[in-house]
Every structure is written in structure tokens, then in C-alpha cells.
Length: 514
Image (cartoon, rainbow, N blue to C red; front, top):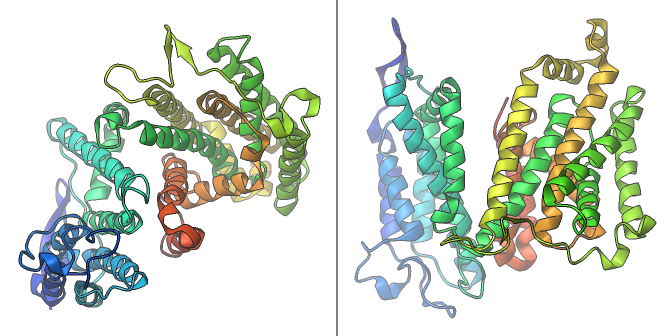
């Protein structure tokens, strides 16, 4: 049984959409709340009390909930709202499955787990998938504070995702389960906001006020060291993600826009890294970085030339061969430029005004300056992708991606456009490689094997082909998950693969669709 509500879309029009009655999700929500308040582990585990007051020793105060149990309470309360039951149920199921399975593996009976899982299943079963409402876009006086608040929440979400579960199993034996459970809560929260049309509304606001949005987003990114993730360890992880995100943006131009399947793209990252490493002791970093970008771009043209006569699977073979040639040449220290098995050690850190970028600055942790460089680099790469995508060249690439023969018949110079795609993509990768070399202090051929190309390609596809933020989202996902799933030792790669399968199953067009 449903009622109707009026949702404003624009002046002079409205949309009437059915909204499920709140009581429909009440049984599942009650089960979730009861399960969250029950003790979860039947014994005190050897590594210490299970997280968040979840063992029987806290049964005398079940209302003192924190961590994943607090998340369950929040999702249970949210499930009472119209439209939110099904979305909240997904998050509840993920949290319950993670902790129940983790406890079962440790030989402890989970009491609250089965009750919570039953509540989540009931929420999904009783809930209805309804079209999200559309909200009228407000003026600047309201839009700007809303965007600031939205990006602040995004900053909090990124910080919590990085720090969930701690840094190592030695300090937190339950860290892996806590991280996966937080992901479940984040997914539930995002789905609830999406069900109410909030995400689409904020996206439309950001597009309408693009300069302001970019400024605030950049400020939020620079504020990450001021959060719980502001440690040297997380700055190193975040800057590494930034390097691969910038590289993935370049690949997104080649694959996402032009539709050219490149299976050896990581070679351009290596070319930029080795070029900068060989010049690091002779020239300042900006010169070495430009040299690395230019060298990679030049070789990108060389690789792009054969694309004039090959396409599809044959193009994939050509690019795969190029990547393998580069890897073997670097392994054998061709020309004494790569160091072979000894790599190229002793690369000095970036230094500016007497400040080494690998040292703390002010009250900020070590590695912050490298993180700031990668943020600016990713922002620049995203600006390049956004402008090219909406330019005449970008439209030519999209036409080639759709049907090259038709594009040629319509007057598109396909050969020139494809070579330009390789040039721009390789140049971005070469610049990222230069930062990569100075950040690590050493460069070896093993960092640029075929598996890295596959990972970059997976990041582009999972994030969303041809989308501006897609490559960043995909790269962040593919490099954060393996780092956090180290807690599961032998099962890490299996869980990582399962996560990718689930993402592609429920988001076949990528997490950020075009």
C-alpha cells in the first residue's frame, strides 16, 4: 500500500512518486536494532575483547555501542524512513556477514550476527526500489554552503575509510573486519542518499557551480592531513594512490575516450620514472619531470603510429608487446639506464627552498608535501581530461570509440586523433612516473610489469570509462583494498577478486557512469 508525495523539480512543475509507508520496513528495522544491542561474541577472544563492546562481559550495558554496532543502530533507525529500508538493508547485510564470518573463523559463536542478518534480509525483501526524486536547484546563497558541507562529509568519509581498522594486524587483530564493516556502513549510507536523490542533486549543484566546487574540493583534499589520516604512513599511501590515479587518468583518455585498448600502458609510467631518475642528480626536479613527460609522450607517438592500421585485438597485442619489450629492456639494464636487477637507488627527494619533501613541515606529517604534489598533479590531469572531453578533439575520440569507420566517413581524421590520444595519455603517465621516482627514492623494473597495466586498466573500467572522476575512484579502490585486506593474509587476493566481481555485477558501467 502506498501514498504519494510531491517532489519539486523546477519552477512550474512537479513529479508525483509513490513512497513506501514507513511501517513496511519496521519489522526488519526492529530486528536490526535488537541485533545491534545483543552481544556478538560468545567468548572473550585471545587477541583481546572483540571490538566495540561486543562480548558477553559487556552484557550488563548493551546500550553502550560504538563502531560497527553504532553503525547498525544508525542504519536500523534510518530504515524506518520512507525509501531508505532497502538501501539500509544492503549495508546491514554486509556488516553482519563480515563480523559473523570473522567470528566463526575464530571459533566464537555470534549471537547478534544472525539476528542482525535476518533483519537486513527482511529490509531488502520488504523494501521497494523506487525512482529517486528530483530536487529543485537553489540559488548561490544556499548552494555554496550545501557544497561545502557535502565535500566536508566526503573528506570525513575518505579519512574514516583510510583509518578504519588501524594500520596493522599487530596493533589491531580485528582491523580487517572493522574496515570491511565500515565499507558496508558507507555503502548503506551512500545508497540511502541516492534513494532520496541527494547525490544527484549535489552533483547537479557542483556542475552548476563548477569553479566554486573545484576550489572547495581541492581545499578538502589538502585538509586530509588535518584529519585522523594525518600520519606519515597514510600520507605515503595517499600519495601513492595519487600517482596511480594520475596515470589512470591518462589511460582513461586512451581507453575511455578514444576506445584504444592499451595493455602496456604502465611502460610510460616507467619511462617517466627512469628518465627522471637518470637526470635527478644533474637538474632540478621540474626539469627532470618535464623531461620524463616529454620522453614518455614521444614514445607514446611511436607506439601510437601502428594504430593507424590495426584495431581491436591486434592493437591490444601491439601495446602488450611494447610493454613487454620495455620490461625486458629495463630488466637487462639496456644502455645502463635502468640498473637492471640493482635498480636505480639514491634518487634525491624533491627539494624546494631548502625543504625536502620527505620531511615534516610545520605541524604536518612527513610526506605531506609529496601528497600535496600528487593532489595538484591529479587536479591538473582531471582538468586536462575534462577540457579535452568537451572539446572538438574529445568529440572526435568519442566518435572513433563508437565506430571508427563512420567517424572517418564523417570527416574525422582518425589517424591523427588516435596518435594524439597516445601522446596526451603517455605524457600524463610520464609526469606521474617522475613524481613516483623521487617519492620512492629508488626505481626498479619490477614496478612496471604486465600486472600493473592490468590493474590500471581495471581501475579505469571500474571507475567508469570516459568519466573525469572515474579513474580517480577506480585507482583509489584498487590500491586501498589490497592495502587494507592484508589483515586477511592468504584470503586477501580472493576477497579482493570477489569485491571486483561484485562491483562489476551491480555497476557494469562503472562506479561513476558517463
